[in-house]
Length: 270
Ligand SMILES: Cc1cc2nc3c(=O)[nH]c(=O)nc-3n(C[C@H](O)[C@H](O)[C@H](O)COP(=O)(O)OP(=O)(O)OC[C@H]3O[C@@H](n4cnc5c(N)ncnc54)[C@H](O)[C@@H]3O)c2cc1C
Ligand code: FES
Image 1: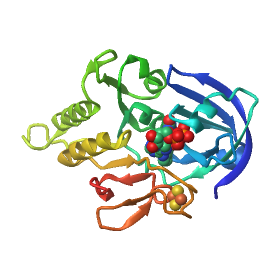
Image 2: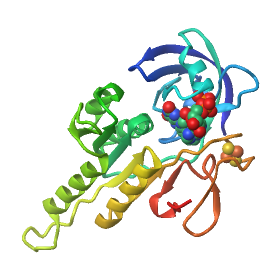
Image 3: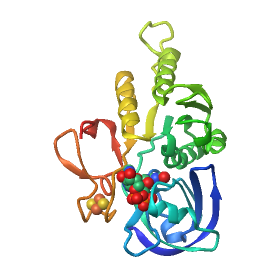
């Protein structure tokens, strides 16, 4: 059950010119329920503003960390919070990633990196072999790479302008990774006799990136889950603000049925 709490900001850190990290002491009741890929709904300042959905980047004991970019009024207010300030937080909300045991490739594009860090850490702590590929606009937008490097078996970074990692899009890294996996143990040539070790792929980022990642995964037979972003109202399935169309023609609530969906469930033309 989601909990609404007045929590204390334990730490407020600026990660770069665009992104902030807040660690919140939300208490045991909320922190104890968190699953990978869920989000919290944070009341930002003025009462006329709705809550703002922000993914849970990491969690431990009573603490929960969110990392966000300043977009508008709400996130601007949030970015001015300091240690000791109080925040009204509702969560954990939504249906997150299904993190099965085995090999995992986590894929983050821009501000899509924070939501998959917690999943990478959680899976690695349970013995999964976790690999990460992250794409950023440029070196100035790069974030959390040290955190990923700490918990992942491999980390590859790419950027639009080549100022960090090589120049290109994150989908190229996904394709190269899956291709390398097929070659390591594919039965196609019969030489090695091993089954291919195709990882599950968890992705978060802009919709165009998610669509391209889903296409690559479908080609390699890699099960892919994506975390979608929609504008939200209530955050708990009670309004229709976040409705999105699924591939079977139905409508689902991103806040309640998602934000994580199997890639094949998503209607990419919606
Ligand atoms: C499930 C979920 C998890 C999210 N996790 C994160 C996160 O971890 N870090 C992070 O930085 N952001 C995250 N977001 C996006 C974040 O909620 C928006 O950036 C924030 O609500 C903007 O509020 P604002 O008042 O600052 O801007 P507004 O003034 O409300 O909007 C500024 C601009 O952002 C766009 N926008 C607003 N809300 C959304 C949204 N939900 N999705 C896409 N575009 C939006 C608006 O169209 C507008 O162009 C998440 C969104 C969802 C739905
Ligand atoms: S935000 Fe209200 S139903 Fe999803």
